[in-house]
Image (cartoon, one colour):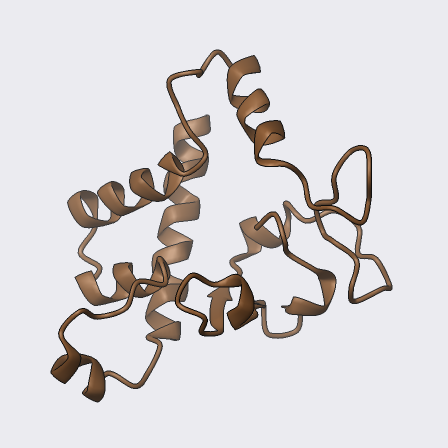
Length: 145
């Protein structure tokens, strides 16, 4: 999210395409953007190379991970980490929903470890991931209320 650039977002299709060079596995990853996620975006910059969430001091550098930790600290949540949000999502999706494990893992950009199974799994479960992300948005917003 910190490296998100305006040119990676297709607002018409509500998709964020993360380039492979920014992904751990080196493969492009499409992220479905539900309306609640789109609503969190700042006003669009006309420059497709511009960062969506630039650093406070230098607009050419992404928002720092320390900035995100500082937000958690100000919220009185020094017990949390930014990476912990992925774990929270995984726990919630696995324990509180009926979404398939494969869909949940695909949402986290995790690859199948079984090479034979992976050879047959050529899709990205995008439509199912969009439903999962909509459920996550509803859960996250209800928890904030």
